[in-house]
Image (cartoon, rainbow, N blue to C red; front, side):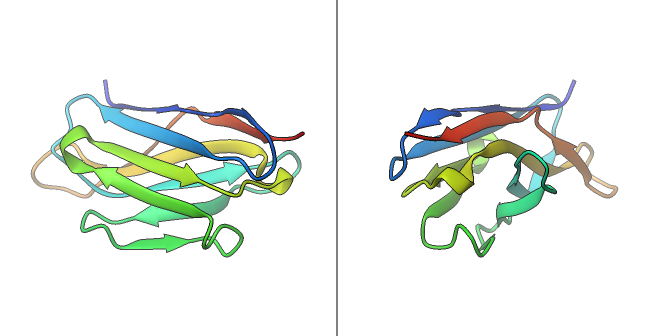
Length: 121
């Protein structure tokens, strides 16, 4: 069974840091892009950051310069280092990955279950 599992969320004070991890497991041939999205109460899900298999990155405007996405291809894991956190970063953070389950055929997008990040004093 293929799944993505996030970890690392929690409660942090404004200005603090957190590091999220998302590990893909199961019968996976390889992984294209991986990314992080977030959804705050009453708001739509939005892109936080995305990274390709060759480590090209893009970020949502609200997190540029504060968040850093990276990946370890050997571990099928993507990370999100979040620094200078603000109360408006409070949301459920979801990872996703475009996974090839076979050598041929298109990738399939899988999502993790989400992890809560709360920034509050």
